[in-house]
Image (cartoon, rainbow, N blue to C red; front, side):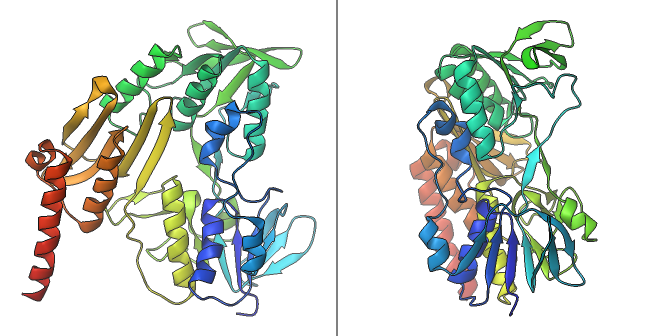
Length: 417
């Protein structure tokens, strides 16, 4: 491959794809293109430690020596204008072209922005990049009142962080509970209770009609019922939109993201897509999904590298997620939509519990708060295809470990029978 592999996007997915190509023995050119001017960095800390500490530095995904030492041509500050699929090249904004033999799109996603009067005022921000986090940190130091639109993970992580730093924080969520698409109602209720106990004001079933400003700077968010919420900073966290425009303009199939097969290939097989922008039929549920997580991004990147090298592996990674909200470490494994029953292990009052979700007798997933052992065991169980009985769950971790070991001992016997 004289033109090698070009990777567009240098987040978790793109950097892992470049690294995995080398780890898998690919010896052709690898070019990693980013529209940011930073060395690629970890994104999860941006909503937590980074915005509360004025001295915090971004955490690089890999040191600069990694790229040079692995012969990965990292090109920051490059904006791709279009994909010439037939000519197998990228058109670069400002002139120039970049040829490829295989292209990996790790274009990620961007914050969804509502058509809200006043959204263009200074002090109205969202969080997706290091530049955004720096702005939130700067404005947070200058603000007494902060309003956060959206009760998802990002919004609640920021709410807990800014409240701990002494800000007055109000979270406004349009639906009737927090974390509506992400976790079970009992988890959402628990998170709300602890955030409110810490002093975060939470308004559910509430929408914002407009933002008001003074001298071009936001000063308040006004709810649809007319309540005026003072705010020197408004953070919008109502979800994200996958960055599919490049792929769509090139004629690649789109379905809530760039549609890919089990090998991460798009409708044009020489072009692959991974991470937040990729949608696919999930092996665990049989439904179409687009997952926004570091784990999904890095596991898909590893598989994409193997696909480039000619392997035919199908994507079969167990999905898992995490979020740190105040004193709550939330960890989730599996995909729990479609569940019809659950078992609770642990104590909500102690802020340490797990919920095991079932569809019939099949374990779909586990949601944990401050019980990392349950999460790790859950990853092993789902990875092995093992569904413990609710009775085994009730016996606690020791009983589950024993049941998993018995299951794993039975499987080789079945295979050899």
